[in-house]
Image (cartoon, rainbow, N blue to C red; front, side, top):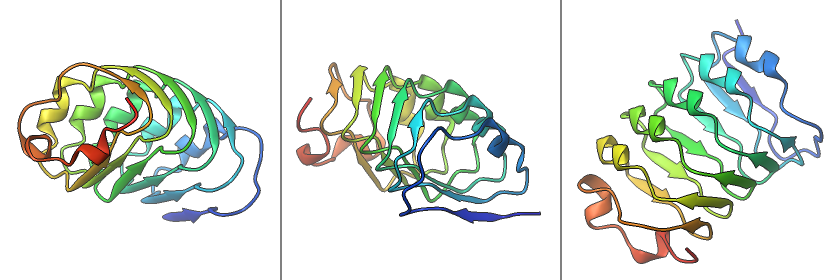
Length: 154
């Protein structure tokens, strides 16, 4: 019945275990500011009650799993900043319509910000800076009036 798991600001190394995806009651998962490496497990997409996912400030690599788009009650934040993630941003993240904060800055992401992000009507803040993104911004919502600082370094 674990609902909150905060392992932030330690010196944990190694990869994130797939078994975290079996913690079905988990609402908060905080793994920021460690030395975690490897891929983000697709199994985290099974955490259907998760409202906050913080994994910034690690050494996570590879692509973002499309399965994160199944976290449809994610509300507070999705923080994947300051890692070494690469590849395209999955369009399935546009399903996170309750999400308020999206931090993908300081990675090695490429391609366009998916047009599905125009669905993120609850988004209050986001940062895509210091990646290798290109192309047009999604229309509507926060993207209409967003400050350039959220996109610098692309």
